[in-house]
Amino acid sequence: MVVPVSAVNGGARPAAGRTADDLRRDNLALLMGLVHHSGGLSRAELTRRTGLNRSTVGACLADLAALGLVVEGQPEASPRKGRPSPVFQPSPDTVAVTVNPEVDALTIGLVGLGGRVLERWRIEISAGLTAGDVVTRSAAAIRALLAGRSLAVAGVAIAVPGQVRQRDGQVRDAVHLGWREEPLAARLAEATGLPTRAANAASLGMTGESAFGAGRGVDDLVYFIGGASGIGGGVISGGRVVRGASGYGGELGHFMVRGGGRTCPCGARGCLEIEVTQHELLDAVGLAAHRADRLDEALAATRDAAVLDVVRRDLDLLGIAVRNAVNVFNPRLVVLGGFLAALYRNRPDDAVLAGDAIRSSRESLTIATAELGADQLTIGTAELAFSDLLTDPAGHTPTRTGPTAP
Image (cartoon, rainbow, N blue to C red; front, side, top):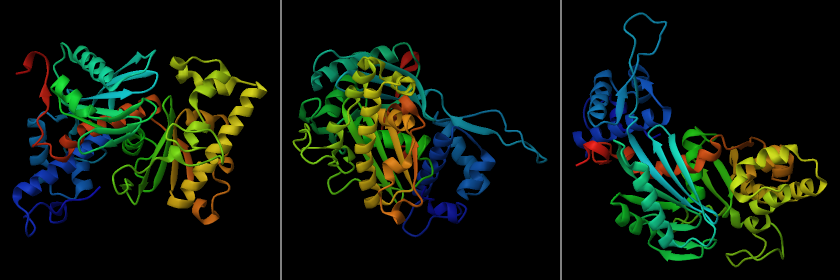
């Protein structure tokens, strides 16, 4: 995390070219981010981590409390003499709403600060889901989800299995859903009256794991996630998300893993996401799509030779993609999410996935499964909805709902 200038000089005075308001905004964002991503820290620990002086930390925490973004909890026990330091926690009333359309379902989530998933609704889809369907169904679900609750809604974020222009939430291509050039974020914002953003679903899943899960504190990682709409991924290198020239980087599901293979919806042949699919695994073990969360235990229990052959084939193909990612990006960590995590846990042999990578590139590599499980995409999507609030806590006003709403 970048430490503001004021953390270096204890908050004494602004650096050249910066105003006191600039420093206050930076300090509020720094402290809000620490409280949010930790779930709660004492004032003493916040002072230690930021390098700010105690009075600056105290003033900023008072501001955040007045904004309704943090609450003071019970003091933490300490072996040291003196008055215990109170713990500051994220406000339980400040939330984000998440929307995730896929080929088989529409999932609506409610997430509190601190990455707490409060509710997640799954709406089964039996036919094709148009962008208009997503707007109509999501708006209705959001109204029902928020009805009667007294909350401060930071915003709505949409996780799209496709390429999204982040500056305005325009879906450029979502081939599995048959969408092209859909102004999804703008349409849902108009339908709900809430600020709405959209981004690539896999990139948001990586954000969740990086902030709260297996990738916490790791500056160089590669992330793969598999779901009903295919395989996506993302890369963090040197602590920064690799986005590419136009923001569409990280399409790891389109690594070519089989020459002359099946034709992918993207138009190419042999892409990872068309060669390794969730529906084939579910069919192999006899599970319906809505029971995908049981795939892990079904694979662990099976002794069926045909199912084990599918697992071996899929892991071999996934290994080609992982090897390419390791050779290109030299990550310290590869995180596998969704049905790819179930595959790996069924046969946790790192040599299968990365044994053929360049030796020097893989010698410090760890392969892990996503820690957030079914929550990873919901939590990561909420981070997008919270992003403006976390960047400028005093400058972003959440929308109030319930009895206290204007």
